[in-house]
Image (tube, rainbow, N blue to C red; front, top):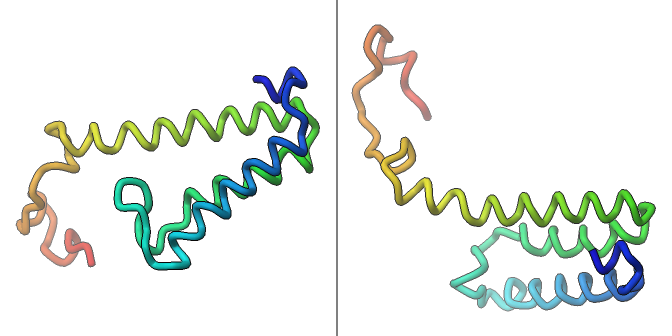
Length: 112
């Protein structure tokens, strides 16, 4: 919101996001990913930072702010919800059965 109200200029916001993206890329290049934050061969956090650096430069401030806010909220949700689903008694935490669902032939239910 500070970007939207003009407290942070576009070039400062974009430059900071770009530097943050480069700093996140460095451990990937050195093959020393931060185990608590980065996944090997997954550059999602870098694409996010580089996107956040380009968006304010190419879009009007109203659209850029809305898009950056949507990106931040969705990034937060995708960071919180999957671990909660994996620890609860959801479909994702159940062991996968090898038996096909009732009424289906084995070939129709096989996922490979």
